[in-house]
Image 1 (tube, rainbow, N blue to C red):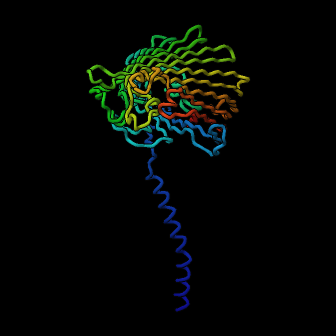
Image 2: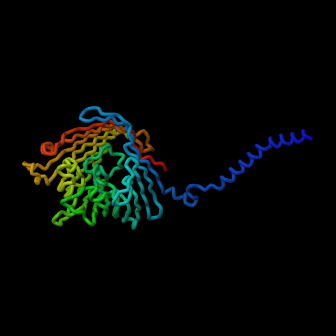
Image 3: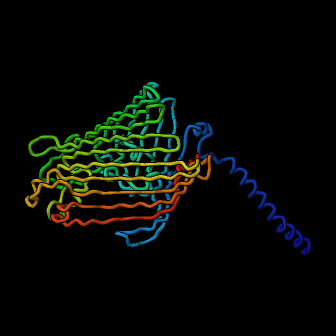
Length: 403
């Protein structure tokens, strides 16, 4: 009797793993039918109109100051994740976030400064469209119009600007050769005091807006292309009640000749309150601890590209940024009436290699050289000193399409 019971227990223990495994397998099968896809099946067809892009610029930098080697390091120069697509027959959206910038909400537009783009576009007709949200301010010129990952170093006016602002824009495209854009935007993302300091000579405008008009043109079958713009910033009022505005003109011109391309950008920024800030940064805080008035910035930017072959390109970027302080005649120490503050020179020779025909990815090697030359007035009055920087970098750039 005992032997029978022992035998029964042995058989039961032997069968237990099988029963447990059968229950476990059955539960896994049941659970798998309960799971839903992340994107509902009825909406999966929308993915054909949605794309995600990882805009990447990664490099190994070797840095120099005044000709002396400083350091070497790997650096994520740019990483901007972008999602864009069509959600309706006439409605499009675009979102791009920059992961190489602090994600702090700005005081004026209430959105993170790291967000470049967050807007929708509605096609009103086949020629007219309207965009609403945070968008690229259509300043004009080719340097600013390119994807930021393709710029090794920005010139002063673009580098110091608020390039992504919130507002509304209208676009008129009468043909493939012409496009006109008009935007009304917040003139800044920060508050007046955050940007200009506690101003004794200016009061904040009640409607700090920027008005931008842009023309994109194509001439001679695309051999000449233009991006021209005019912008007016309503920033403040002076003590007499007159508006303190910023007027900005950018004229971008591209010339294409077979394997050779030449671009020349001209920029002119007349600022009754120093928006760019280079002049104000040069002046010590014990003289003026706020942004000064009446500055003028002039920029020249050239880009040359020669295609040795479809896979190998040689490029050169040259830039000159001129900073002037027109109000310097009020400085009692300025006996000569000198207005010039500094010249900032830049030169960037590069080699770019495109290994694949079906993938927009390039490897590059370049030298980014900058030289900052201050006028005698700036050196003697403000203690400014000439200096130069340089860096040799190798890396890759790609707007890598994920889907």
